[in-house]
Amino acid sequence: MPINERFDSTQRSSFDPTDETVNNVNSNISSRTDSNSSASSSQLPTANEGDALIANSSGQFIAQPLDGIISGATLLTQGYYGLLTDFYFGGGATETIIDLNNVNTWVNVDINIATAGLFDYRPQGMKDAQPIGHEGDGSASDPIVFKLEGLDIRSFANFRASMAFEPEDDEGQLESRLLFSRHSGAQPSNDFPIEDVSLSMFNGADIDYVTEPMLSFFVGDTIDTNGVGDAGKCKFQIKSNVTGIIKLRALTWYINK
Image (cartoon, rainbow, N blue to C red):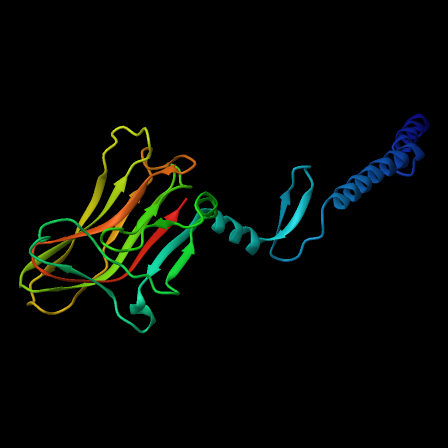
């Protein structure tokens, strides 16, 4: 019995939690953990609620408000380009006469842009490529042509025309389209349309039929940006099978880059 008691006592003492060697190991582990935690904390900037940590070119994290990041991304990728007539400023719409000479013919629609009627909120890449997003003065002989420069084949857009048509005959039909011209070197090279039937007028003549045709399109490899000053373009046209008056209120392009 004394031998067993002596053996048990020796075994217990070798695992004594107060042993100096064990304490030193625990102390070193604790010291390294505290040091790593302190180093990690010192590398991170102070952030407020709603901030996101963004790494810069040097690999350092910078706290930025999330709202600002979202706004910056929107500025680069989304926007619209609106041309409004005096209709939205207390005046009247711009009128285009459809007479017997241009019935069943695609016609450029006149637009007189109001003094405060240009709303240019295109994605930043389009603004950098072209300071003004269109060419033409809005007359039938010099129509508004929207420039697609700054867009690539991942881009897409929606177009909306706001207008009314006053037919001189009952049971007429009005069609709308965007006519696209391609950039240089494209195959095929001819212009192409996206069309829609906007109005079927069966409620009599000499009244306003209001319509807002919406046309969607993607920017394919023949109308994307091919180089500086070399990209696709598009213009709005209508075709009526009866005489009457087009009363154009606004043209708007909604863009996703």
